[in-house]
Image 1 (cartoon, rainbow, N blue to C red):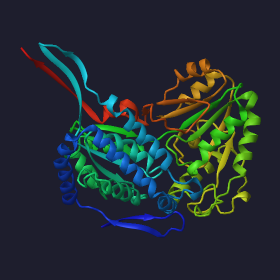
Image 2: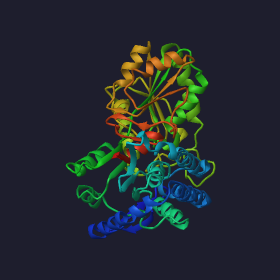
Image 3: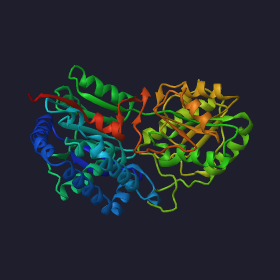
Length: 457
């Protein structure tokens, strides 16, 4: 049996790979377990340098990778791929590794040595998504390897060449083939491996239903999990905000990558005094987009990764309009709107009874609502089953932090949006999932504490 990548550009089969059966997959994981102890026994500095070399090797492939990403998931080539963020995240995790993994010395006297060390889980499974296939994968791969784990990567069927490229790069610089493995697996085989306690840690980025399947598979195994499962991220524009900057950043956060961003902006609340001006600027921005073939350097908005994703956004938008919402972007501006190619849309006269305001859209549509004050905005921002990020726009940092303290979310931005800072823990709450990646906390999740109580005399 094979797993196929259907290109959103033209609906053709772009990549097809044989998937492993359960026996083959178990054999691969056994090799990873056998190789892990020798990998962990290498010096931390050696592991760091090998990972950094592998990352640099990916950089040397970037021109080919940009084209592959366009064919696999539709991102326009004008944006140049993901290597900037990929390198930034891996480099930061390499930089903090010594401190994050350092032994905590409680006592080292003539009588006792009492310390806490951080040790690898063993084999880490990374289940990576297609929307930012390099950056989301490296969030766990780099620190897991640096911390001494073996890594098994199961990449999304929409972006299979990403796993192959990372494996090619890492193996070429000397990371052992059994220490880092890219495996082509279906959901059923992956679930069986997890249920058989094949992994010490599982990191999954994807849908809520996918996260539930991971949790179900891990039930009773006590396997540690990291789950990032989506969002419905809000922006709040206060009356003292820089209107132009807020509109440009929030609309870009809603539309970039055809809206297929984990922390993309999906709903915007604007102070009543700025509402009309904000909406006018937002419409101006969106009307200037060019929807089309991502291989065209002039294209600013490519197709969604799959037609069914585009149809879900169309359905949410159509339902909202039927329930009283007003669509502000004319279809006449985007004649290419069909199949996986989805025109961007801004909706007003929306409310939280509409699916487009409470279910994840993951596409180029955003609803904008006026709010009378901070209390109303906080209530609306928290009226969601998700909690990944929120973006606040004001000139008053104290006000922003006071509001941030009341928002149920993993990260709060002020005067920016849709960015992952590797020095901060990437985390969420509610249906967005649990756990935390990157930062020192990322290392703590990818290792376990081990205490040593040694009596010398």
